Length: 303
Length: 188
Image 1: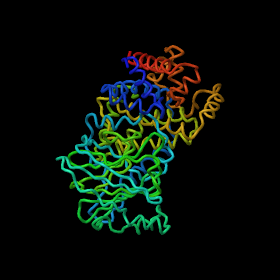
Image 2: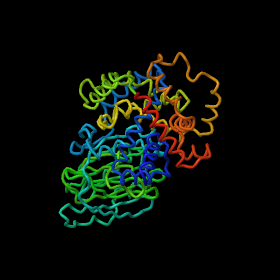
Image 3: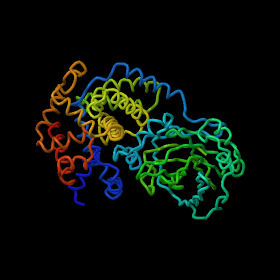
Image 4: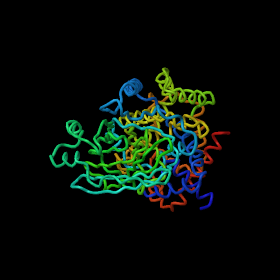
């Protein structure tokens, strides 16, 4: 692709004139042409000039309503840890981004995705900007479908290259029983009843509301395992996938990708051999997943 | 865009205070809102046509600004451009998924003869706005058409190519050249 074509794409992205059909192409441009993001920024500055022509004072009450929402948001948290040991990560935990990672995180105005409906419902969604490092280790994952419950198992290989013990191949009894008993997996009562032991016996849990559903992370007593459960979280939109990441001091590494068909009313992932202080991050990525977490963070839960 | 370098500087300082999440962050956010809300809401209104939808969308955009303030990097552009980009993305997202393009085009066509914006709602005219308007008018009709359909119409390049019976490269070329010319003109 010559520079002129590249600039044409940059202009289209800056004007939000690309659609799902362009997503893979645009992702490839960001990946293959390091200066593409800068081109988009430059055209976006020019595009923003056009907003000045449409300037209209908003309704007076809009300001007060907005500031009230901000104040409320500052006072409340969307997560409800059941013990003090597990705390969802706050956006304030992250410093201002500096380089490529944050550049990537800030280019979400690129392809517009059909996630508006879900976005409207995710009143409790945490959107955090995380300047993570590149993943340092590989992760493998297996998916088993158990009557409406998608069970994932992630085996994380440590950065020293030594293989680790695979997760127990049996599904978690907690959500199997929840589905079999016919309880509403999205209700609060279900959440309460879901606190059965995770591998090794759970000791604490963190939860976050996402897109009208709920994601919980239940830690095992061994401190090295956890179960992540997604209840009533809608499948990702076309061309997109959910991707799990394990994040620790060494960076973020993928722990699996969930496409549209993988997401069930209850979707569960078992994580083993977790590094100390790890976080589990769920992001929205292009189909097939990404090498690094994008800006579309759906949940960020501390183990 | 901020209407002067001083506005630009002020917006950046306010956004940085918001990002710091200090005791005055909410106050700074309110001041940033006062500085840019006319452009954010006006752009949303222009794209979405429906005032209620524009108000809701601009509010969501402002919440995103609050949440993502730490992501702002001044070397990549002004605080206003960053804010407006977030808002435009949201407006386009909404318009593509809540309203059919046909309905919107019909609404646009219905108001063609009306004043472009309701006078009492319009913020006092500013010289910079006139400047941008002059620059937009100075573009070739083809460039202007492509920019207006994309930015204010929320249309994809494929929509535009289809409507104007052009190839995709031709549409991209018009958008690219239009933005370059607009930027040069505004900076003069």
